[in-house]
Image 1 (spheres, rainbow, N blue to C red):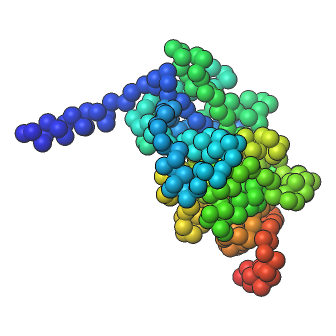
Image 2 (cartoon, one colour):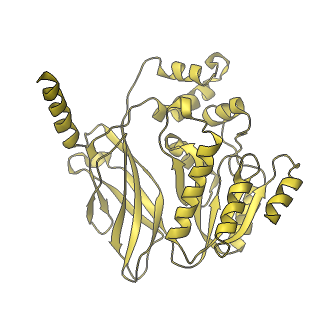
Image 3 (cartoon, rainbow, N blue to C red):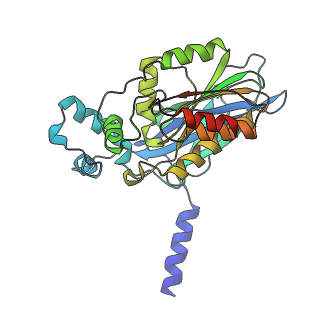
Length: 324
């Protein structure tokens, strides 16, 4: 009888979602929006709910896990470590419900959060002149000053889209050296890869007008990546990151990375079946193989593949891929 009562209590708890509190925040990650017919579009909403917390010693403990000696860091570097690791030091809130409000004042109830995440595809009426950014915000009448905003990026049925990897393609990360990757991610100032601006110019000259950034980085890094993209005036686009992770899972294995990138790029292909795509990546890990495989599978969709060669010793690798 006692076991049954405990189980029943847990079941009721799980079924009853709670509303957002004034000290709980929602982080939106830019999703896609696309036509479904002449009158409607679908907009993707990706949200994470969390509460800001102060945990004494948490930053030092995290630095230890990352094998970063804080005594060797400057004050500026310590501040970066604290800021960029913020979302690795908190608990994402499950079983939360909330509404989002679009610019036309329509409301949409988001699904209950699971491990802090809630995602939905919202049907909206198509306007005569569609804005590229479909904006929305958390609807919290009691806490108007704390409303968080987000957006989905709309692209028409036809045109050219560009898909970019981030680490070592746009941002200098040194993914092949785990220690250097962690330092560059959490401590050092983010820097653009040399020559990436010319690639953006080339892609724009090919009339690409929709941008998608696909990376195996965890969702907790989105705020830092957004600040970097804004500072460097990188074209605004959608982000397709892994879900939230523990710091111990920060660096994914090869199979996880490949699956994540393939799945998300194929999702873009299916959302925009009439668009052509340019795929931009680097030779550090598996971008050449991933992109070549997608080009074989979708020969009428992949218009161009651009790879940054990190080591200049990949001629045989690229030659082999071009013949498959």
